[in-house]
Picture 1 (tube, rainbow, N blue to C red):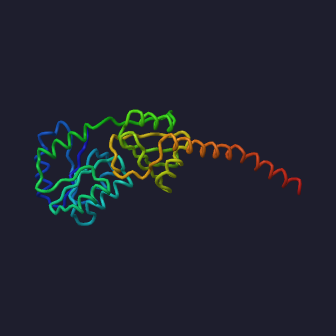
Picture 2: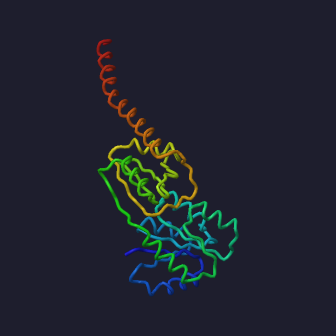
Picture 3: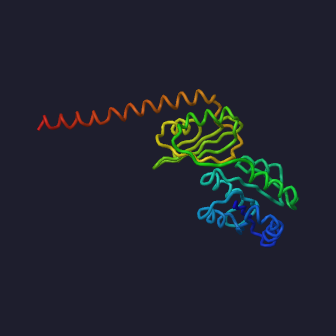
Length: 244
């Protein structure tokens, strides 16, 4: 069953939202956290499908929680809610990756509809044995909006797609276009697909085909260097033996 977490430092608000959602217990499970830090801790121990968070909280506020989720759980959608709304606050929320923004007092019918829309927004899955370049071309053709987590034995990164366009990418070392090139050079990848794209701004603007061609060129160069390295090492050892 899918899980929705309500994050609010006000126990009354948490309880009210939980009671309002109780009739939908057969559709999704409601969890609660008193602040962003507690929510972050819970996310490390179980899969959360949607976060509904207050903005102003002690320890870790809504903006800080958004940034944490962007770095660690980029496929998890976040709804932000606040009683102290302003145009600047709303713009910042969306810039940091909030999927929806609500002003308190909440319209429960609107919120419930948004929850069901988000939870049923699309399929998720895990794939292996397919090249990243081929899969990205498929996303472009079908104009998909999603987040991809790309991983190997010792590396991982994220690619963001919106309406068939790659808009951003990141690994632990680099971001943007360089991150996309890096991931295209990886072998034996695992692709996790989430039908959510939390990024709004388009950082990567090159056509996908150009990105793929450059990325595969970098991969070929790395593969060639890898094939030549053992020969170089053997030649060096042979020369050392001659000197002795």
